[in-house]
Image (tube, rainbow, N blue to C red; front, side):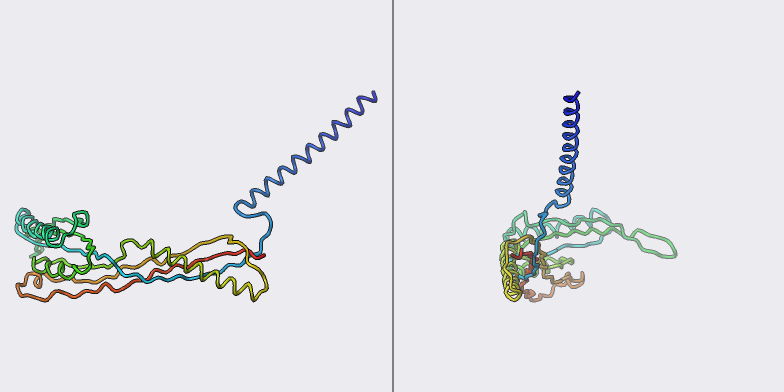
Length: 253
């Protein structure tokens, strides 16, 4: 009888211990959930921003060239348009050594054109328009290409943009400058506050992407069709800025 009582007491103790153990496990699990991605221990930190700026010179140009014509029939309009645009593409490839991969047709449309008279709609003809986008990798050729567009009587010339073809190296330089600036500011502030900086806890950045520099050389049909010789336009690529703002959080020791 005494033995059974002892066994019952031991079982009761084990049951209580089991409940306590499960409770501890549950609490630890909840703490782990609460602190996903950060330490459960409270950290003291300082957050600093730094700016890195790099100036780059555009190394490519993008130009939109095209032709818009209206004729009595679709066939006539297509032939006229095709002759002009094929002549343009042939000249770009042969005279300016523009690779085929850098010439892209961006638009080809056929629209009926109507006249209105006495509340009646009369078919006047058909308009065919075609545009191509050209990437020019030798910027010194841009002026000559624009001049050739006029010589070919193209009447859709515009959206000249200067860009940096591969800005990643410049972005990395700007990023390094931004982090350096943030670190210098953090060290100066820590010195004033009488604390020491620890490791970087977090980092984020915002990038001011290099914006394209646009020039518009659109011309009216009457000017494009003129046989009067005009000087080639002088174009300048200028420069563009890449700016990265870094937000760095340091642990305070």
